[in-house]
Image (cartoon, rainbow over all chains, first blue to last red; front, side):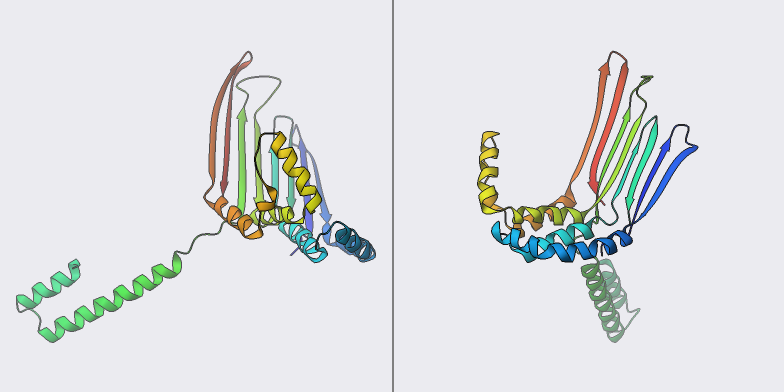
Length: 87
Length: 153
């Protein structure tokens, strides 16, 4: 399943200064869906010109998108803490 | 011969139990052993880990301009699988360029040899990957300690 929410959390020193952003990715996918449908024929033509199986390409991109779920990146140093989570 | 079976036979030889009782006990032992081996067989398939973890813990050793840095990255294995599948999408004309660039860098590797099955094996072998790096760098501003761990969980 593709990720539905992204969380970006930035805490500056002192840690009371915090910035937390929830990105509703499911809305983003809904917004991008019409564009994706419009661009699909062009994408298929480009794939065929490059001699790449368009179905295989779509499946691979879809699996990359789905694989992003549960990604967790956390970087903490003296000045700030940056946390990126994809749920 | 295991210990329980030996005890049963000893009890039989000492006349504490009859031959029928001994037979029933041995049958019960065999039944238990069979069910235990079946349970073990079910619970020991190769573990498929879900994430690749990268942990970096760096301590600058008192450097006032650079504090401790901690990095904690968790990458889903499914993302790695999908990523390596991208290699299959490289157009044939681009593969020659990639091979040529690799040869120029001194890497005699033919990207045409990468097959989806091989890639799956490659990612599966990552399950047993564990990298531990523990380094101490002595510089002008003090001792810097760096610990890097890469493993699957």
